Amino acid sequence: MARKKSGRCHWRSLGIQMKIAEGRVQLAASDVDNFLACQRLTQLDLLRAQGELRPPREFDIGFQELVRRGEVHERAVLERFRADGLDVVEISAAEDGAGATAEAIRDSVGVVYQGTLTGGPGAALFGRPDFLIRADLLPAPDGEPRPDRDHYEVVDARLARSAKARAVLQTSFYSHLLAEMQGIEPRWMRLALGDGEFASFKVNDFAAYERQTRRLLEAAIGEDPAPEVYPEPVEHCAICRWRDMCRDRRRTDGDISLVAGMTTGQRRALKGDGISTRRGSRGWLSCRG
Image (cartoon, rainbow, N blue to C red; front, side, top):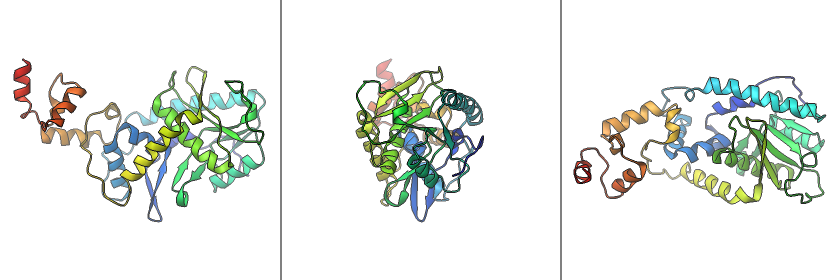
């Protein structure tokens, strides 16, 4: 099994781009995350994977700084596990990451670091969780006994000091793949937060949400072309590598989102009534005034 002191940090997987292999789209946790942030982002990433479009920027804005800070935090979590006396096997140098991860799990090592998980028809899903921890080495937050069989749970390092919905969704995605690999569903998943705390969540509490989001994503990139999603401004626009293209599209269209002071709810209501441009909104603005 490949072991390595230091290597390609998992935080670089933030830059993983949607891929097509053997005619199939391979979905990573970041794709699920991006779909939740913006469905137009998913469509643009698919066009890039198909070779039909290039983003204005290779990575999201601030990506390199996020990688740097993430590496520091992840390394601190790793050293914490080592200080607790846990044996750690790092997978990042292995040619067959999924095979090396499965081997480490069969060997019942304490911590699998930077492993690779695959699943779905034709291994169309893959993920790279920061840590897989043998479940008996972690306390069960509810005190309930775990299954007797050896199995692992996901711990993912996050810079935020509180758990965000998208981070929990990604960890749930990893837990789904882990269940396929080890043949048993983990009860718990955790986020190693930026303040040093571990936030614990029951896998079952989020499994249905993760499954629904993944199925919606799979449908959106399926064989039947999905209708184009308009590039509505969302929170992710602040860092998105595609943001200049989407902003130019809204300006060209004179989109209603360009009206100063208009809330997201007002914009949705007007578009629901067939008003989608600044020009078309003048009547509404005059009545409002």
